[in-house]
Length: 188
Image 1 (tube, rainbow, N blue to C red):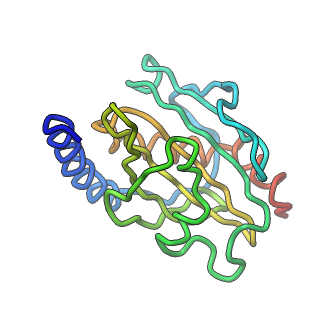
Image 2: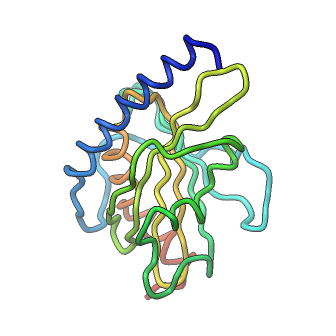
Image 3: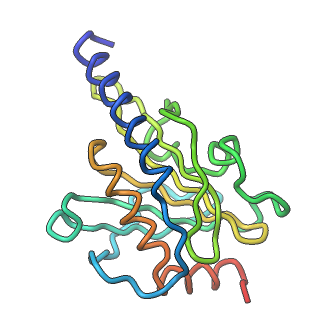
């Protein structure tokens, strides 16, 4: 790692950690409903198919969200602890989809609990290392309902993280996403 890249990564880490601490205290757990605000659009799933199949890719353009956001959402049926769900950071690491972004990643800060409608879990910020490039900052949200995991992988500019999590949670709480969760997990 060259010195400039190391300094850049260290500054992003400190900034991301501070933002995550603030965001962890400000997350509101509101019931699902219709989303007013930014428009999310379907995008093509950009990753290879694995044992969980494809997921849903969504984007929110800069003119809608203030900056470009990409969200990748997948259900992992039967891949969550039935009694505890996603209750700790080890579970985020186990069910998350970070390997799609890069093979070498590390957490930037401890995760925090959150709720998105009928699904609950945790969010955690990661740095994904790439050869000859600055690390990518990724927010992983791992949620559970019954024995099923719902995983959201979110990419955007690292300095927009405080707004990012609120916008993503608002989308995950939307009626359309909640109906999709119910259909995937067999909820009643």
